[in-house]
Image 1 (cartoon, rainbow, N blue to C red):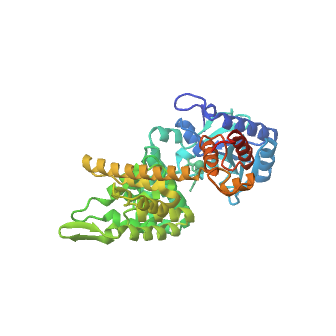
Image 2 (image 1 turned 120 degrees about the horizontal axis):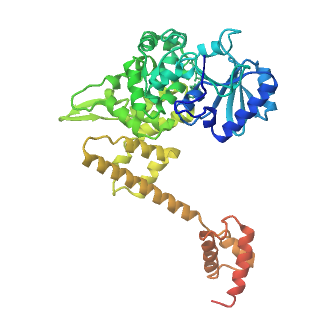
Image 3 (image 1 turned 45 degrees about the vertical axis):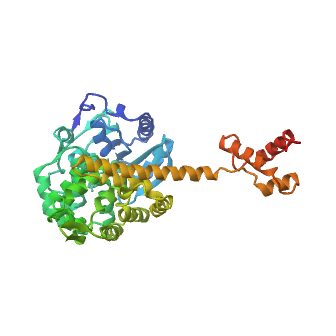
Length: 465
Ligand code: ATP
Ligand code: MG
């Protein structure tokens, strides 16, 4: 199962890790070798290295049990050693500033690395690189028993050890297959695909939390429109997102294709969970609010109704409360920025800012993405309105910041300091101190500095006025 430890491009694999990751890997290799224990880099990191992509975090596997992993990790200088996953005996740690997880071989007892890899989901995720291996295993060598590298080159997602055999063991793999296919610009191999279609009912028994987390990851891939289409084509929308089925199937006179529009909007938003979820669900209530009046199509109240559906859906999938609330607010308000006009008063803009809370940038991003009209003129006008709102918000914020810039000593403090009654002497002194704050020469809370400066200024201006 051994192959030359090189990438598709011929570069040594481990050499492509970041400097911190290389240092961490070298330290772990030495520590595990001193304990006569093996260590392999596995999973997504190996896949990303072969693709020449940056590796976000490192996963290792070893024959050593968790107690020995902890000992080796601490000998290597790791901090924050914790138990990441009791079920799989995973030890999490930080080393050289890198997030690392090390897991004792999974799979049948005594099965070694091969059994561990055979229990993984797809061939492209079932490869390892030797870090500290047996005597016949050269460090840096790629171990690839299921030809994951070949499948990566052919852009194929294939289940292990047999293509379709294991989807039923863990139906969440269906969602993962769709995510990886979109992310790697790959095709799901036919048997694997058939197993996904046959097994999608099994998703009902997967914990909603795992589904929610996996969907969030799916929403963040670059080819998210393809990923969403993949979910639909494999029949995965119904079991996991029944609330959006009416939107996906919607086909009414006078209305655009909502599902195509939705996918365009999601893809046009920046890859952040809140705004991507909001984009996916922003028109979810359009089918139920559709009406035609005097020959015109309307979706009265779809924002509020959609916000309620989204809150129910995301709570069911156990997303963080803050995310649920953010998405609810964004959907409720998603139509407002494109209604902005020169007639909006400061008060109106302030009210919208208050309603939007900390998610103002998300709302602007969502509104910009929601402009998908085929007519350039319509697109340009909508963008101008949203940019106008953004500029108006920015001006109000700048004014608010400026208003905060005051002299550290107010009139009362100055009267007390100089033991003088109120009078016209106060104003120029206060203005002087405020000017220093505005110029950044005096901090707004520097009372001592302001006192020294006030005394100096009074001396200098004594006898004036
Ligand atoms: P990403 O780059 O998105 O993190 P990943 O491949 O690292 O992708 P993880 O969820 O971090 O995915 O899982 C790490 C590894 O664990 C995978 O590469 C795969 O080998 C294995 N794995 C994860 N989930 C499953 C699963 N449901 N069934 C089997 N193996 C899995
Ligand atoms: Mg990972």
